[in-house]
Image 1: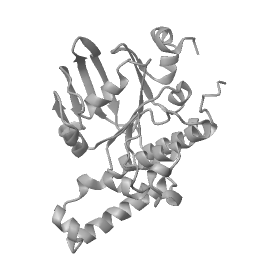
Image 2 (image 1 turned 135 degrees about the vertical axis):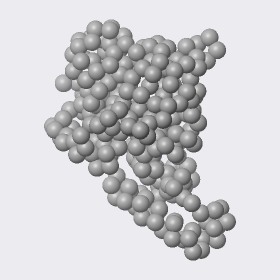
Image 3 (image 1 turned 45 degrees about the vertical axis):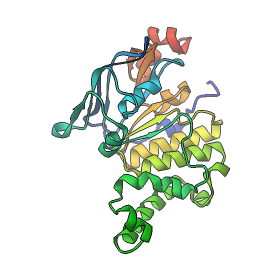
Image 4 (image 1 turned 90 degrees about the horizontal axis):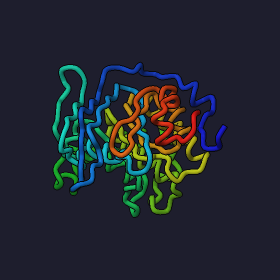
Length: 279
């Protein structure tokens, strides 16, 4: 067994509280180019409700670009994104980030994007912004409706803090926290938005083995407890194979594999492009 693998029995014996459901996100023929450089070429795949869907591939394969298209940071030149289930599904040629957030898409980033001078609690509280209905003036005066609203959102944030087991650092400025805890705070901020779909861009990058095990557990717990659908980019193949329901593989902006972890392990195109050896 490779040292990088997170293959403890508790991860593989993960009991799913929510059965995988209908297609929630459908990516159809998406192409993205920057000048003459093609980042994505006619990529298609889907993500089903309540599943953990991994996107893997070598550096420069287009993984982060794909997440950026899904949540509206980039606008694809070709293709469509369909989000939602049944009659509530909406199709987009492109959407902006605010619209994606309102539809229920939350995102964490490869490079931590937190407010370093603010406490962990206040950073997670920013995840509730779209749910706040009071005006800026009402919030500044903190009277009546604004006071009730903030107390309501603070209770929701405290539940996230308890869920992620970070009560001991809730009042600590995140700039003073170790890397692994900063990543957990960023996960908490995304979770506080109560998303239908959570996009995690290398949530375990730079972590040691113990931190990776903790993050794997929390990702699976979020998926189980909240029923949140998760799409994650991750380079640690042990992690990917242990926690993912399905895996899509990109190489030079093209899809070269799509299936269960077992199918991806046996896919020769994937082995040649990324894994290097048969598993």
